[in-house]
Image (tube, rainbow, N blue to C red; front, side, top):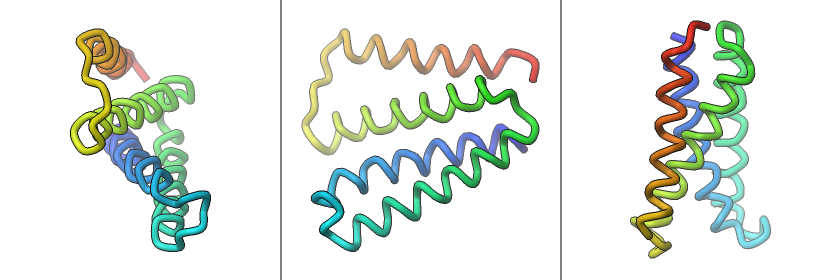
Length: 105
């Protein structure tokens, strides 16, 4: 269950980062509220997962999911670079997350 909470927290972290892109310096209430709400929800779920997972592992996975998701959203929806090197480095983050999942808690 802790891993499920952690993955959901990471996915919500993606929503938070993308919402913050559209806050225009926190001058747009909708994206600002979404970003803050998503941040709080993500941190709540992360802290719940930390009851059963090592903090280093959980934090690395949480930030990794966020980094991968935001990067992929940037490529797909915002026209950001999808260079082979960038994709390879993102794949390394993904491999690191998979490796951490294999370690005992």
